[in-house]
Image (tube, rainbow, N blue to C red; front, side, top):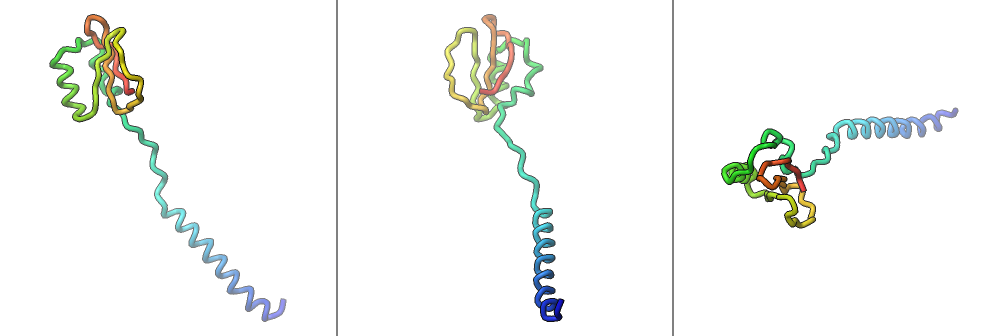
Length: 105
């Protein structure tokens, strides 16, 4: 290889090597992608209330805990809208008012 070819090739190799280092550093410096977060109504935290009676006091306590987020109590055969609201807490109760479960919809 001639000295002219070596002189032209050396800067090209240097640029290629530096750009490879630069992109590797940039990729390593990037934070990992954010985990997919979907709003939750907290139903998974309320299992201790299953089997309790949905008294006015208990429902008031749950409403205070939820703040501005919606809550609805669903009795057997009650009508409910079918819109999906992952932040809405649904309290499923039986005919006697016993809490059967909680769910987010």
